[in-house]
Image (tube, rainbow over all chains, first blue to last red; front, side, top):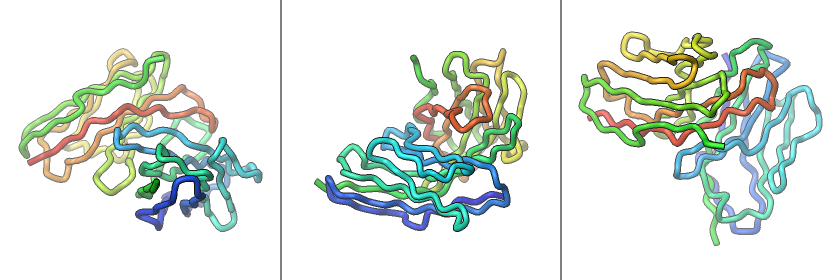
Length: 117
Length: 116
């Protein structure tokens, strides 16, 4: 079974600074996708960034980028120029590329990010 | 484009009572998911529907939980009877029927259930 581990229950960062959230995962599959989701107090999960395992290039979305290390099964999220609106719970998630219709996401326990003004 | 709708937003019941949650997915999304998010944990998939059919219900406690998706659109999740450990946020999500990485799951605001 696939597992996703987020070892940092809480992190804090000063506004405009950079912060990195860690995620490791365990799988025997070679083809899969990895995601970072943001969950603000409103509880609505929002996709931040995605990474395809067969792509070596790290994904970037504006101020958000990942460091994907496939051999180490590591997938960290870097937030640059942190803003107050970035404060939220962040979840790392895994989805196997089964080729079928099972699109189940497996989530980590999350990291609560606080942004200090 | 309207998002995923869920109701109610909050529900408080006593143990052994029954409760039902409703979800309306984004129009045109063939796939619908119910996740359970216990406090301090990430969401866990309970059931995935593809149109009317069930794709994965391996983690659904079938002795007390049931779910249906009528006509491949709206869905209801029921718990009967509820236990204290069912206290959680129940998230509904929907997506297109596409196995690729750009098939994004869109989440609703969730229903927070408290079982006393």
